[in-house]
Length: 134
Image (tube, rainbow, N blue to C red):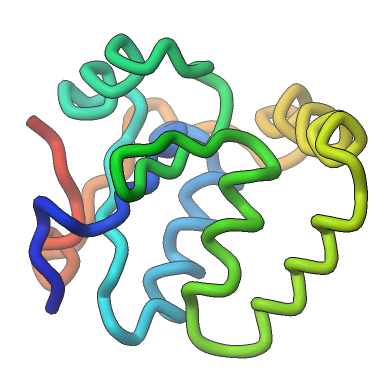
């Protein structure tokens, strides 16, 4: 398993059903356990949001000291998980403003389309080592 300090971190909306399902999907396909996860609502997530002035309604990837948001985060994550998800990198042929417009449409409607939890998901004992909270 990779070192937590040097692992890429995915920030996500901890109460969003779509976001939680996406995190579960990444965990299942991250066979090398590269990624760590933090809810945007967590102390760790809030520190990164403030430090990098990132949007609170977007998936955020913090990797190698850099921040990737929205469609850029998704396209950066995809080739790092097992399977043919690297094929999503074809999305780079679209200009970022267009990719982000599609991303924003889903993000704006995620609660309406996929639902929302009352509180952030709690990882199982087996997955706790993948989640950063403080």
